[in-house]
Length: 311
Image (cartoon, rainbow, N blue to C red; front, side):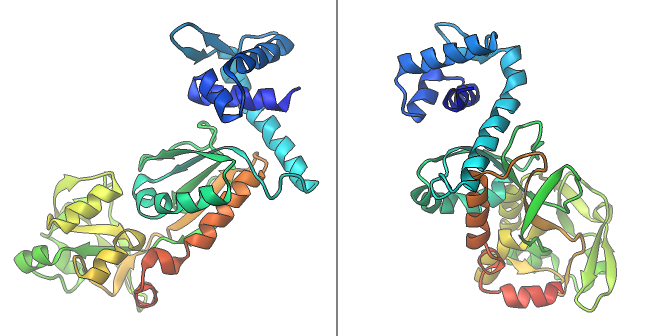
């Protein structure tokens, strides 16, 4: 089976545009159409429906797509073992990540990555709503949660320490809590999950943060919006240090109960399906992110002090 024809099919299926897919692979429009037609003849199915207005994936094409990706991945992995293309990885890399993290820490790095690996096309899905990595046919995803799914493998990027913070204007108006018991009655910017959270003191003492005992008038499911609402003085919120480190250093946000942190053991993981071959394009992107995004860079200059507080 023609691997390059499979690459063309995968690219066309993802873009729903045969001309654009062919251009990406250096093929003229007529050659792209002919190559796809030849693949369909070989398989005796129509993979893509074509009309004068649009291209759509057929039922057979949708069923075949994950297998086509797997065949390409196996071929790339085999070439890498033989030392071929190991230093020149190529292809489309589908990557999912929380939008708030990606906007702050990944997007600014992409020009450097693309200068190092010009033959890799990044297909990014950025949302704080979690994608299913297997159903979505992603090569790689970033998750900020404990890794519990046995069908996934991962490499740790950094600890995801989460803290309470508020704007100075809010604390000037409503007062500074001195203990977890003082949180009751304070305004709280909540996530959709309103269940109690355990917080831990640097000396190991545990306490509970109970949103229902606080004044919750705003519920947000986006990390960037949560941070901006906190900066505007709307209340106390839970934020990851990677999100607010620069605001804390600048004084535009202040740690609330600074000797306490959320006790959820959350970690930033780069994950991929256990069934997937770890291709050169995926491996180089993982290595790049791990090298570039150390805890020092994520948490800023105050990392050492914050980590001591977080325990």
